Image (cartoon, rainbow, N blue to C red; front, side):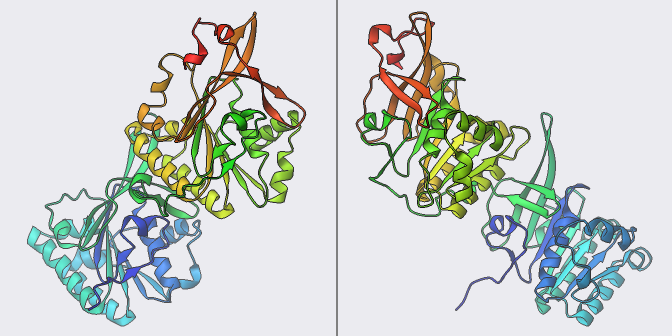
Length: 482
């Protein structure tokens, strides 16, 4: 016996994922949200996807607005195709029928139109109006039940759209198979849209709220990473290979380089050489071992200019396909969207090296800081499963003192390797120092090294080991104690 449910492909990025594989064919759903939340766009995006599959869709409005205004708005969106109107997808208004003849007449008209068109999907935009016409909850239940009964008999999927706040005990909520709630919330000075599957009968769904955005492509949903990737998509690729850091003299301290498929954090204050370290790591990319740079600070032009000052030709690596540069300005970002952008780039390029310049960029994008530990766990687990060796930077004021609380200890425990960089005062001169603080399951040189920056194509390089008695920073702390 086949118990597999038939699913509809919505062509709404992320929607099928949060709905457990897609909307169930022949089921009924409520799309609930305040005006402007995107219910109409979401329903039309799904309707046009079905129409492109040559399935018949009946879109019924119970609103006083004309369809001309609706088409005018939809015409700005990529999924809209005027050639499908009147053929695969039919729009009718039954506002007058509802107002003058009531719910029974509305049901009768809908039945007739569904049979005439042979529709496999019905969208009813304006459920609020139908609720207001009904005198009692029984009227509303009867209306929904009759539509559901006809839809179930014909295999038609029904989408009810409403701006009313429907609670769990409302007749509509209890009778339909699924409820999707769209909301727009204010977080400090930011507005963020989120969608939640509040009900999913007979089907698993990703719980909790998921961010979404509305653009010229329509609606795109970004499932919470820690829910969508609660377990990585592949097995953990434990590698015995070592990748060169690009910093001359450091590989020997790491027993041959950074362990493959690991995550390394370069921690230090501004100006200590973290981005320069990353440029050196990227310069070893090749078409056989491509790399991705994912940064929040320098534009690609400024990054290439910085590399050029080191006599490193990043544009040549980009032209050869060995390097992909991605810049996401540190302005308003969606946390999960950033993660999916990053993972998509790694997958598409089959990157072996990844440099993330600024883990704080993810933290700043989050409107719920308590998510960061679980989010980062999902991200790093997935990167390891993709076989990419990741180097990321985290800026702190200083390595000594309370730096280990920012990032949080829970995040640091998920990082395989930690390299500290800082400024040290010696003989009235500020020098850059580097120390390997952690390499998971591996021996390493614990001494503090002075590093310099060369303009001869090598970038960062180890100069010498810093004597313990000279290894004092401006606060009088011993950097070797980090």
